[in-house]
Length: 120
Image (cartoon, rainbow, N blue to C red; front, top):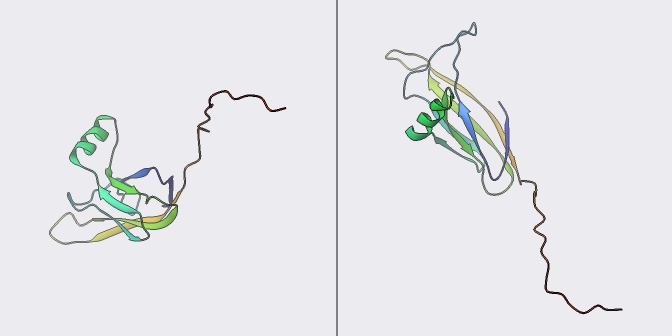
């Protein structure tokens, strides 16, 4: 899944695992991971406070965030988890390209100086 944002933003990543037939499934608790294999963006898992706030707002499956770097660029991101709910490990992976651009200006920042004499 490719994602876009500005350099002033981060993007929440959610997992909603499904079976081969598209039915809801699960990954092993605590196995969710996020990473940025290439590029200057960074990844971080959600804090417990962020998970609680997201759940209270009706969010489902929040894992963490992909954060842009300060300058426009492109990175790849990857999420993974253990699909084997038992003692073994069966890692499933998803991810994509993350493109982040400089934000558009929304204010000209106009100002006026002190009055000066007219020039003819």
